[in-house]
Length: 555
Image (cartoon, rainbow, N blue to C red; front, side, top):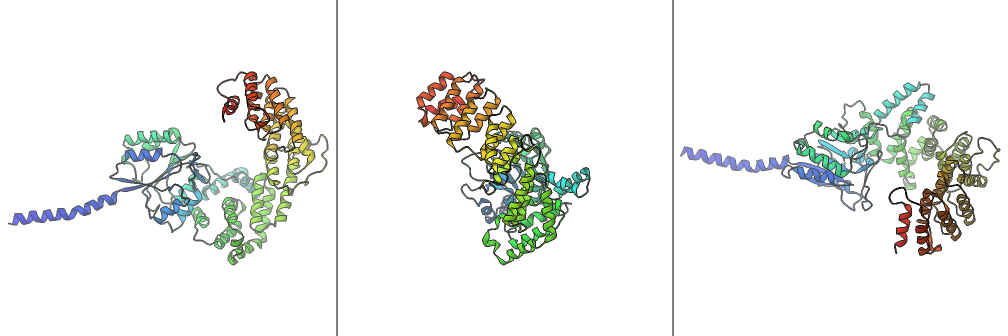
């Protein structure tokens, strides 16, 4: 009797324990979240090798839904592992190379999720993050202001060596590399995997992952410890690992600063007050925040700027004469025109410059650039982009002294970008020059200011046709390739040149123009016949001529 009672009690205990055991097993099941913007090779490889009894997969991307990450926050998903499969531009975007894919992921959005308590669960129990994209853990600073920061520190009296050391300290402290930004985003995560340079393509990464998981790597997933085996398998591809930032990190303040910009619980006025504080810091330190400041100010429309608290914050900044003076002095001393332009635009956005003041600063900068003994393609591109709406036309229509430093094609192209007819004519002469550098400058100019006058296009085409077969002639033809040529006479000049030139390279460049041109001016059959009869032997493989011939066979 006693023995039977004992057996009964044991059976009851076992029965009662069964639900709790099942619940414990369910509780131990790990959630692997995937963000698949590009190929799904990495995700599917993990899925094949990890038992469904221990791991559940949740894809966070909802196709066709622009707010899919916010949707994941609302669904209270809690990830143990995060796998991101996407190309990475090394700056702010995870993206796909597939034209049919519209989904993407910004680092700014990840920062918002990381800093905002409205998404408390998504990353709360992360043990591992896998970032399958190029340069996701690159330790090099991404800021374009780095060179100018060194120059700014040297102007303040630091030696070049000391300035470089301080820059390294500043960039580490403020998360200026993609590795530092990922450490800030994935705060407290024990292991973050990524690549310090180029990452393998999806199928290659999937193959390497498969070998790793078959070799016992499946037992290491979601353990929160760096895997020497995984790093070894991906060693040829520069895989790296790090850990998320903690409160005790010496650069924890950088995350605090980042969250001021990223956390949407902070009002626009509060963020502007924070920016005001940044502008009072040493110039080199404030420079590191230019991108974030520009994103903030550009996001504020007229309605937001009229809000009393926002308007007051802007007024407080505008009235800060010491900060304004220091900022504008630093802008005028910037040696890189693109950096100077950014600083001028930020000064305008903050209320330190009116629109008229901004144009005066730009005119001053362009005048200083034109006075330089040497200018190149970047300066030409800058001048053309600044005068895209022709507001600065005529700013530099002064006479150029023959033989002076300004009497060359690059300076002429700058003047042409600013509306000078003399500079325009001189630049088009440069297109016909045997000097490849002059042709390159003319190419840059024509990308921004294509020829629209038919008679001028005919003269230029005839001039190119009269050049000897050379690399310069090929470059000049390539400059015409960006024009949608529809003039019958221009097309005939090109076809005669195709028949007469001994150079396959010249013919290939002509085909590049014709494939984009309006060929209704030349009968399709006649053109195809002329191409077949006159083409020179190709060095190897298919070329632009083959592409044009195939195009002519189409409907």
